[in-house]
Image (cartoon, rainbow, N blue to C red; front, side, top):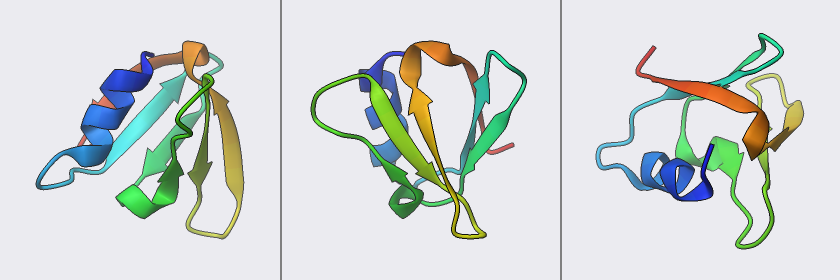
Length: 69
């Protein structure tokens, strides 16, 4: 996944929750813009979970995105 596409999802008005579908079968839910951190450089982002956990995501390993799923 390209970082610019992720930024477009992050800045969408109104924001729509989305799932990052990883190539290993995991789905990471982004329910609110505050639940994802996109650094200005690099290809890794952080997705925060409802339970307080977090996942470090290597963007090239994102296979697809489902919006409003």
